[in-house]
Length: 428
Ligand code: PMP
Image 1 (cartoon, rainbow, N blue to C red):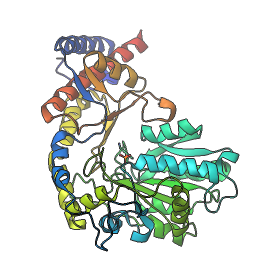
Image 2: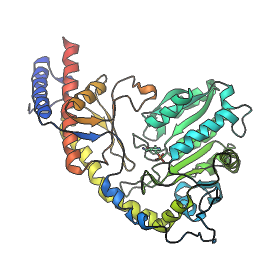
Image 3: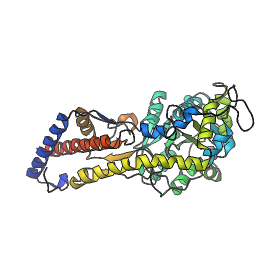
C-alpha cells in the first residue's frame, strides 16, 4: 500500500496514479477472496433475537389484569399493560397510545391511505382530492419513501442537520406550498444519520404555519435504542404541539421490532385525542382487534419500563462493538485519504457515510462485484436519487463481528478505488 496517505484530492497526478494502482491491486485480491457478505439491511443479529427467546414460552395464561380473556375478539386499543410500558419512553398518555399488529410501517401506510380516502381531523377534503406532497428529510429511510411512491405522493427533500431537518428550508417550503400534507420524521437516532432532533427543532416543526391538515409522521422507531450513556431526554411532542395550538399535527409511531422480534413484535400509534378517535373510527372497519396474546407475552416478558431499559442494555452490549468496528474501519482506511465522512451515532441502527461526490454508486457496485452486498447507493433519497451520488447507508447489526470487519475493509477498498478512478478521470 502507498504509505504516505494524504487526501486523495490533494495528490499530484503521479501520486494519485500510484495510489490508484495500489487500490486496484488490493481490490483484485479482495475479489479473488470470493467473499459472500451482506450488510444491506438493519436487522437484529441472531444473537440479539436470542435475547427474547423467553417470549417463545409465553404467555403464561391468557387473561389481562382486568380478567379479560385475550384469546377472543375485542380490545381494539391493545393491552393497557403493554401500552403503559412504552407510554413514558414515547411520551404518549396510555389512553392515546394504541398497541396493534406487528409492524409500525403497516400503521403508517394505512394512516396515509385513510388520510387520502377520508381526510384528517381539521382538513376540509380527503387528501386524494387535492395535490399532496410530503417533506422528506435526506438522507432518510427508504421504506418511508416507498409508501409515498406507492400512493403517488410527491416528495420534497429537506437537508438533515445534526439537530434535525433544516428548519429554514422547512419554513420556506411550508409557507409557499400548501400541497404539503405530511413530513417524515425519525426524531431519535434518525435512519440513517443518527441525528436526534433538538427541542428547538421540534418546537419549530409543531409551530410553523402550515396547512390545517398537515401531519408530522413522527416515527420514533429508535426511542429506546441507545448505544451510549449519553441519552437524549424524550421530547413530549404532543404537549409541545398542543401548546403551539396544533395538537393534531404529530402522529407518533413505534414498534418492538428491534426490541424483541421484528417478525412478531407489537407496533404502536399515538396522537391527540382527535387523531386517535379518527384512527379508531377508520380501523374499526379493518379489524375486530389485534393479537392480544402476543401483546400479553410482551408485557410479561418486558414486565415494566425498567425491564425494557435492562433488555435494551443487552442489545447495546451486542451491537456497540459493531458500531465501534465501523468507526475504526473508516478511521483507519478512509480518513487518511480524506475519502469519507461519517457519523458515530449514539443510538439506532445505522451509520451514514458520505464519499466523494459521484462515487457512491460505483463504490457499491465494486463492493457487490467483490461479494459484499451494501444498501444500494441512492436508497436514502426519494426516488433513489442522491443528487450528489455520495451517501451510503451502513447497517452493521446483522453480521457477526468478524464478517462485518471483513465486509467493511472490503467496502473501504472499493471506495478508495472508486474515488481514485474518478479523480484520475477528471484529470485526463
Ligand atoms: N421506521 C424506521 C425508521 C425504521 O428504521 C424501521 C426498520 N428499519 C421501521 C420503521 C420498521 O418498523 P416496523 O418493523 O415496525 O414496521
